[in-house]
Image 1: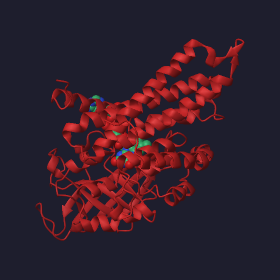
Image 2: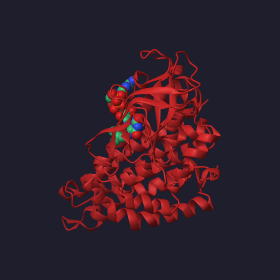
Image 3: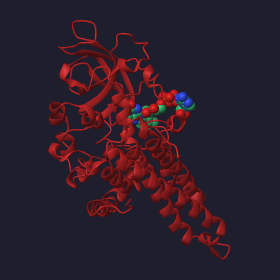
Image 4: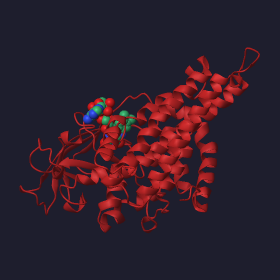
Length: 396
Ligand SMILES: Cc1cc2nc3c(=O)[nH]c(=O)nc-3n(C[C@H](O)[C@H](O)[C@H](O)COP(=O)(O)OP(=O)(O)OC[C@H]3O[C@@H](n4cnc5c(N)ncnc54)[C@H](O)[C@@H]3O)c2cc1C
């Protein structure tokens, strides 16, 4: 067991920390206020080689893996969770392609993500099907025939919603029911596809008005008789498991958004209470305040350990069922902790923390997204419990 980062990862952490301080921090409030996509930061990330962190070197990435991406996201999330989400989107839609895609798919769709010439988004959720993924209604029908084979391709129809980065994306990983029975809850009834933005029948629908993470839009993707060639099926037809594997491997990356946010919030609030005078001392002199700071610091470090360990596991390919409790634990703890830490930061600043003059109110709004996306806290608790009940997590 070694708790130190490798030299390469430490260098990555240092350089992203600097970039985040110089480029992300000064822009964070304006991004939130204006709610527009920060193309300048996308270009800064591209120029620093951060868009390909989790992609293999043979496809133009740097091969830093999920741990490398998590470390970079942690630094960026200290100031802006929108910017952190931009980095996360280099992995969420590409994950299924990396896990189960063909060589041709990888060669066509991955290098552009690494060099910033392509962007992608991930479409699993539907208006009536969030946690209950099997409730999805988007349908894939074999072109010119029925049954499970589709030599000449598929026709997709349906609506995906709450899709992060839907407007900027050039291609989408989308999931559809392909079993012929839209009511089927069988796991082999869902298939993953790569869909390009410019294809006929692909349209971006409404954009959501949301409470935080305003720099990256979320919205609808409308699929209306979209022809998808057979070679754009990711993995097997009926490979729903792929959606779960992709999301399992993402847990440490979402967790990193939480730990970075909490670190940023606690550092900011600590500096504030150390200079805020009250009752003839500073707020930081009160033991009650110090204990809150201490508890939050413990929370952050516990979440970091869970997150880094789960990232190492995911990089080893340990994202199948038996590892799920560890991955889910990181996501659950780090994101719930981010909500607590940002709430504490608002509280420590008092009225000032509630006002837009300080970033605390923004952290507070941004943090809440994290306990909902990519498997809610309740879904993670269910998965952790399942792990214990099935003895995947056991101490004997
Ligand atoms: C800002 C943002 C960005 C997003 N980006 C994307 C994206 O890029 N791609 C994408 O596909 N989706 C995206 N989503 C959607 C997200 O994945 C879903 O919101 C999430 O899966 C939860 O689904 P839901 O909102 O339908 O909630 P529901 O499933 O309706 O859940 C409502 C509540 O019930 C609880 N609940 C549900 N089932 C259970 C259960 N079995 N036991 C206990 N409690 C339960 C939930 O935890 C939650 O508290 C995004 C969402 C947000 C807010």
